[in-house]
Length: 245
Ligand code: NAD
Image 1 (cartoon, protein in one colour):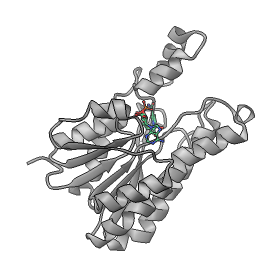
Image 2 (cartoon, helix red, strand yellow; image 1 turned 90 degrees about the vertical axis):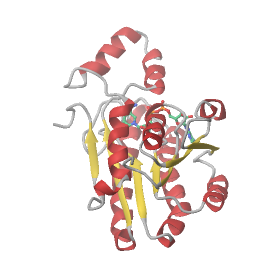
Image 3 (cartoon, protein in one colour; image 1 turned 45 degrees about the horizontal axis):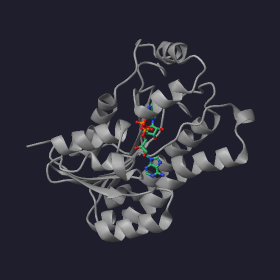
Image 4 (cartoon, helix red, strand yellow; image 1 turned 135 degrees about the vertical axis):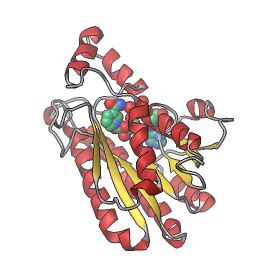
């Protein structure tokens, strides 16, 4: 049997990148996966994959989240993966950019957990996994002002939820990746004046000498979803190619 046999898992931002690799890994390990994303076209690529059902969900939309929670009910695993990388220092981050990143990277997790937690508690517990980053409280990374601010907040949110609900069977952990090959990383690299140099710079930032793969992050998300990690809560797990070392 798979490592997640019998579990029901919901993942946000699962149409591409780490979220997508995670829903595929969860399904391979025997979970029933609800893959959600704001992008219906890319999400549709997952339709027909055994073990996966899709549900369009914008994590900025509180009403849609409440409706999804009512419809879906209890899940064993909630992986809040949605997030956005703003490039710039505090001087390049105006109030709109600040609010957008905090809303998507932090407040969306607050919305999702508030909506899904009551049914999880009622069902006897579950595992909540939040996407943080090595950029934040683990390490200050240049040009990641609001990104790092928001991802540090994710660690605080994670520890707080863990402390409040661990006696009710809820575990809450987060993952702190280094630089991971993904469609949005490709977009960020393409936006530089010299994309070839920009990719070299991203790789140079990784002491291991290469970018991480989405599958390498999904492997941690499988561990944190399953009963193998039953004694683990309130922690951040760094998978970063050596940046923080
Ligand atoms: P990505 O950025 O390439 O894809 C993100 C997905 O999120 C897309 O499918 C998009 O449609 C979806 N999305 C965007 N806004 C949404 C919304 N409002 N509601 C629902 N879905 C929405 O994927 P990625 O690079 O693997 O990043 C995933 C997560 O991992 C993010 O939280 C990111 O901050 C974090 N992370 C990524 C890296 C990296 O180097 N790629 C490193 C550390 C942390």
